[in-house]
Image (cartoon, rainbow, N blue to C red):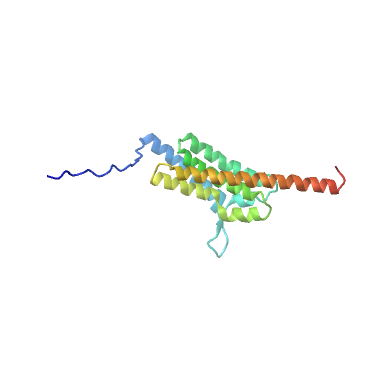
Length: 177
């Protein structure tokens, strides 16, 4: 007589939401869809399929444009946090906003990048994927987020140091220091 081994249990995490939670998620999805449309896909270049929104246009305003766009995106992110989205999803959405902001600071290059990157549309896609097939975050997810945040922090520190160095050299050249 042979004993039959049962297969290893499969670790599935199913998300069954009560009706009020489904309504909250639906409202949140509507907010992110609207934001992706207005900020990233509102206008179309005639004769092409290339779309863009207000984000890269606002980013053309020196000094305040990219920060204003990032604040608009961050407000939606706060709403997502209040609705209890998983932390890894919030972290990835934050990264999209941060990447758009960090690269957007660079004149001309950042503006062109904003036309292509479309952080709000990316965040809407992340939300749709999470809603369609929720899954547990892995150590790899967190490692990815940590590495990207570390790289962005390093880029930010270096760019600030270069900016201050250039300002110092300009002030010295003009005889202000």
